Image (cartoon, rainbow, N blue to C red; front, side):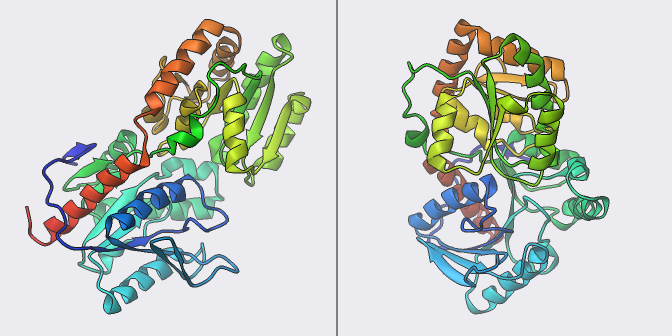
Length: 390
């Protein structure tokens, strides 16, 4: 892999509005939309506001319209979540026949669309997260093998294409997989800072350990439950809150019951954005135990709230959390290490205050406008190179 970097300078700017076609599994209106869809929406609505046309092609959820607009974005939906990697590719190529597309953009967050296998047109893959071996912790062996095999073809199908990666860890993951690319830009996520940084820095924190995110087996949230169970006897006033929905909730509730902490672990399910932010401001610490992420946006949101984070020392989370500064990274499956770090942040006021202040300060670099500008430069460079402009 060549030319991994976080920004480009002296790029040729587009001399006309471009038509960009995004291939994705979900759009921002999908009921299962998560951090990946927020990333695409916040960046590409700004790119559309800049003047480029954006058509977002994704799976069609039951009851959703086949076509609608969200601001300056055109949303097209076809197929379903099981067929999207075929139907979205077909819809994108059909679209280009009647409305020429300057650049196809693939969100490689799940199964690749493999568009370069079907067209010689310009393609820019955006890689937010690849499962790798972790998919076997989430899906049944047949489905996991299907996803794992599809990812194995990425180096061959996208050989020589430019890439955008969510983090340095993701860029290095591509390199380890043997991807040979012209260049890779790293464009991290942003935040609506005003929404997250509005809390009172002097307000007392509740003795709450907070998890925010999907409840999926591969996230291995039970590691934190076991660490919490170890800490609670000496800190009986501490509770744990779990925000988010997912099919692993029943298992996690059983684990909490088996550990004897069901009375102190609250599963709140899906909550509004306002309530999520409120709980992030109130919590003493936010935890994120995933073994592999593209980034882990909840960690950055917590930093903007001044809430220290404990996260796994794993790909993606290493980019999002600065160890010993904005939070702490611990070995993913080491329950004792998790418990020790929880105990420290729950009891050491000086440590908590230092980490909280540094976390707030670090979050100021995460704004969507600058991220959209980075992405727009990458897009314009990809189109310029495709047209022979150096």
